[in-house]
Image 1 (cartoon, rainbow, N blue to C red):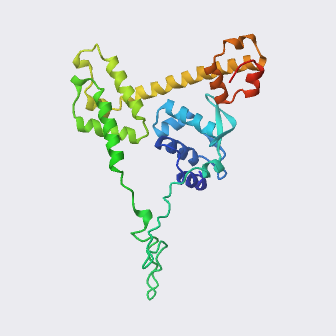
Image 2 (cartoon, rainbow, N blue to C red; image 1 turned 180 degrees about the vertical axis):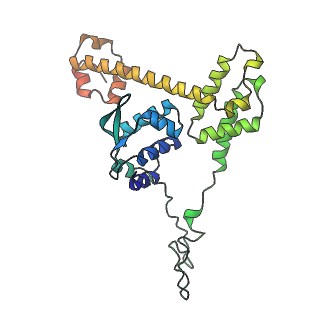
Image 3 (cartoon, one colour; image 1 turned 60 degrees about the vertical axis):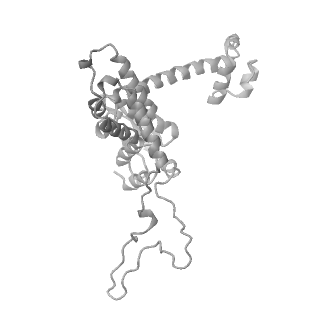
Length: 284
């Protein structure tokens, strides 16, 4: 365990609560230089209680972003486990969690931002930070942001089978809690729509009441399935692009079947260059 790595990760934003939870677990396993992280994705899943697909997707994202680096492998009872290293330079380049200093503009009797000096008679040190220090003030959510979240939650709940709606306030609270956990509103909406479609021919007794459905987080299975489908689609597209790139590299006669949209996508993915496109007789 390395307090240095854990503190470095704790003081940076990683984009979501899920990503932060996983990187903090990995940091707990690291040496002071970020290396020597030896734990399987199954171990991460068991300790964080996140979905297996979520863990795999997040680790792949960290590897792609360079936050995690594969440094080797160690044998285990199930074959081998990849050894990772947290790139501290990448971590320190992320946005810090600390709020910026707030300038009040006061010139007559400005509030001191530093720690108090304490009484000079008794020699007792003052508090490390005054209660009115800007860093102790938590910014409340704006009304505009709250209204947008309420509107999204209402839209998601409206997609549930109408004859099995119950406990609207509780359902909305569960939906908002799910969105706070970095579940995208559109993913949650698609999960509800998928459940409504799956149970369209069921009798009422076979369809779960909405408050129980959201309370038991049955939407999570659908969200993870959607993520798996997106990953499969992305993998197929990546394979297809790799095949097209081979045609272009080899200047194959099959290049004539490559469309302009595909050429644009290949250039955007940077797996071929403008020079290769032109050499293959294709216009960008």
